[in-house]
Length: 373
Image (cartoon, rainbow, N blue to C red; front, top):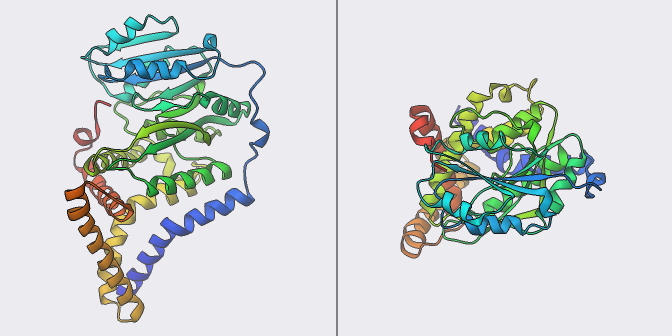
């Protein structure tokens, strides 16, 4: 029995991190969806509304609006909706002081979270296309030139851009590049599962009504579109820029909330776990569900490898022990003393976050998952 658990754990981890990416790469290469013919700007440029949901953003709001207005797109076809989600600083005043006719401010007193702010903002969108933005990031001037043409394809429901993270103490680095590579292959094959909340464009008519306090609005909306027969595309050329988390603890807390949000998503959209109803069931299980289970299989592998009575089992055990020892050294020496991190430490912290996420959600989801923005 121990040998079987060891083997299953090893195969599961190999599938999650290596075999699935290879499979989806091959599928993207030999069974791609046709999008090459949809790459030109339409002759009649569509109106675009940029939605910016903000909570207490007085320090950044003016620069962010100016960055959006500098996009290479006709100004008479570009509008901005700023949703002030219960701001109690000078955010609203600074937006009003700009006195721009194509910038509309929506505000209310009580801070209700991003999903509620999105629902409020969508009620005021009059264009067919809406570009969703966050406060902290900035856009390349030509993002609309790359995003808009994809909607020439009637089967495209949303397009997500490429978030480039500048280096910082908590930067996910190699992991984020690995994750984006998988998304790129999924996009070419069939559809990605979610979008990057800081930069994605969608058809307004396909945007759902968000449940209260939904954590992963950037997966909830795309999955509802996929169920209706639409694809979600990754556009590598449309770039937004962000700073990485300032500390490893900040990145850890963010991942706990995001990973716990997956459990909430499965409860809100139970059809996603049904292979008959979910067009991207294979990708969802392989990419999302397996990642949530990885920490448990890492524990199984470590414990069983100690008892496997052959050279491979012992090699696996001592390799893991060395790996976790190095991670501990990096944490207490490199991170605690020098505020540096690397891939090994990020990998361990990511899986600790996944382990904590399952506990957090099932014990007290409302208390731990909701946040102001």
